[in-house]
Structure formats: C-alpha cells, structure tokens
Image (cartoon, rainbow, N blue to C red; front, side):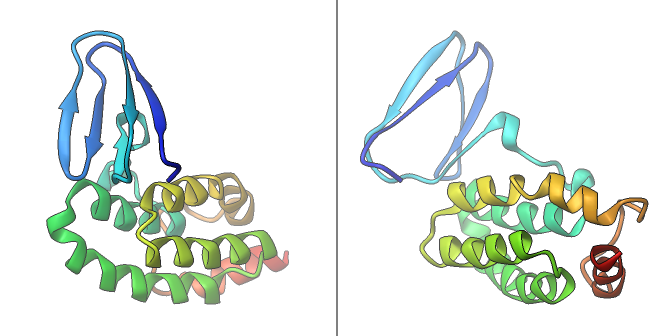
Length: 150
C-alpha cells in the first residue's frame, strides 16, 4: 500500500481494518496513513456466494483480512488451492494474475490480491460458460481446461 490511502464511506457503511469492524454513522472520508489490512463492505463475499473456483480463492484471502487470528488456518488452504487453480486454468491472463496473487499474498498485500482476483471474475465467467457455477475447487481442472480450450 502507498504511504497514504484515502477511502470514502457512506452513512452506515462498514469497513474491516486489521480484523476490526468499523461502521460510520455519516458520510466520511478516512485517510489510512500507514500499512493496514482493510476490506470495504461492498467487497465482502459471503460464504454462500463463493460458488466458483476464483470466488473460493477470494473467500480464503478475505478470511486473512477480516479475521487475522484465522490467517494460520486460511494460509494452508490458499497454498493448496492456488496450485490447483494454476493447473486447472489455461488462460494466459488468469495464469499470470494468479501468479501475481501468489506474490501479493506472500508479501501480505491482501487488498491488492483481492482486487486482482475480482478482476478475473469476468474472464472466469466466460471460461465457465454454461458450466454450473457451483464447481468445487477439487476436481475442477478437467472442466476448466476443456472450457478454456473450446
């Protein structure tokens, strides 16, 4: 993160900063002056919405931001999921961005990692096409490679 980062929040909006949930009662701007892990409320993915491989990866990284005490549980899941995704996808943009996400997570730059993953949702939707959106992480490789090739 840059040395300073300005965030604008609407009334009753929440932001998650270093595991704390903060709700503002009026329109406000916050300037984060040092490196913190944060997630805006409108970027929070609910567990039931983690229905595609990339959304599942997003949810794992999101846990690292929203619940720092669970980071040691989430990190091994990330380390298992990422290679499976790299194996499953053949799209060059997805592969490049997943490798970038790996670097960002290693550097604890979770906000940037989440932003990169969100940027892949549209590509993933195109690749999956008519494939059911509830594909799980395990066993997803074959359908994704077939969809990407076709």
